[in-house]
Image 1 (cartoon, rainbow, N blue to C red):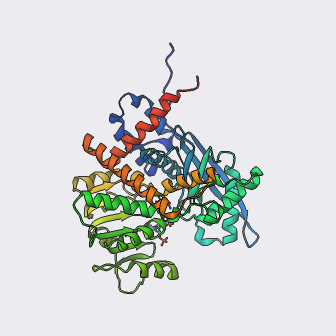
Image 2: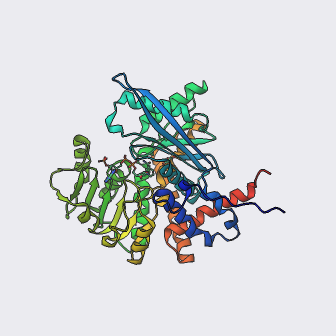
Image 3: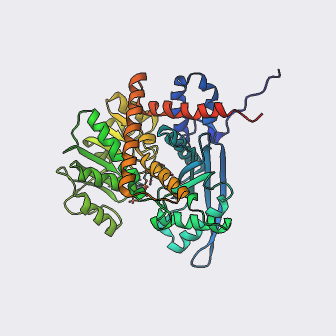
Length: 429
Ligand SMILES: NC(=O)C1=CN([C@@H]2O[C@H](COP(=O)(O)OP(=O)(O)OC[C@H]3O[C@@H](n4cnc5c(N)ncnc54)[C@H](OP(=O)(O)O)[C@@H]3O)[C@@H](O)[C@H]2O)C=CC1
Ligand SMILES: O=C(O)CCC(=O)C(=O)O
């Protein structure tokens, strides 16, 4: 038997490269001792199955030509087609999309959905482009990744700065190129186009359900519990409203425009209206401004990061005075912050569980599209709640059994499912 050289990982797959992919690799390292014989396959999790970089040229409204870089990464498809959102953001990189796609693999498996993990992104600041320009970017991006997506291959959905309209353009472009209306190619579509009731609110609703469960386990009554939220978009805005309606006290919110605070509890409905009218929360009536440092160090029962990656890090983790962190965003906590918070007694409910409500209702949408039979909103919210409660209970039980964090517990459950599928499928000789 000949000896084969081992190939070093390329720099962008290296754990020592800072950033989301390095963080994901560190999380895989932490779970490996719990994988038993399946650890033989763990390298599979450290390399995305397929990564595509595309050039997106469009004509701007002023007649000039602009180019944008786009990505679609399919991290793992052992348990089903790739699944995951598309992000439009000026800071999107291949490495970030790789990490987001890997977290999708873990998330789908942690909640036991029959999907793998994928994610897409376009490096663009959408605030500087018109609706027409964004439509052209979306359509060209869809055509460029068209060969690798499809209802049985990889199903995109909304993420940061994309929405139901973006999905309608993606569905239409894909369908035109295929010559057949294909509703199941994306989820998070408008309801008039095969979208699911409840999808817009699903991620925030899932955050609310696991937050409620975690508070209950910790003996914290939701009525009057203090809540601090970073991000007031789809996820943070919905979670804020649901906690507010359940009688909790949302005392501070941060978005791009600043941090607002009211120790007696913010009027979340008024704040949502203010943000819509003014493009952000800054200057809302009956609130005081806080600095970012003051925001992170507020004493609170629940802290919900629901914006971007790396927001809880070694620079601010020691000042956090939250009993529980519910990760609404993907990858908001660095491994250093994870350790600091845990040793300070803060429970972290990890992203791959806490924000899985969105992909869960995307799964419902995909099923409804295949069967062309649509469910009521009440039915969807009920099924979502049942699945989130079950997933939370099962991750908590694994965490207690192995005396590990909920993140490691969610990774144990998910990576075991993914690698069992990998092993039983075998490798093509
Ligand atoms: N949408 C979904 O279904 C899912 C989303 N997620 C994750 O949740 C997170 C939020 O996504 P989503 O709500 O959809 O995105 P949105 O674009 O709707 O909202 C993002 C929010 O974050 C705020 N924000 C962005 N950057 C900063 C910053 N540097 N400091 C403070 N606030 C900031 C934005 O503020 P402003 O408006 O002022 O720019 C906005 O309020 C992401 O990590 C996403 O991947 C996870 C699962 C599903
Ligand atoms: O709804 C989906 O398919 C994916 C949502 C997503 O991108 C995420 O959970 O991060």
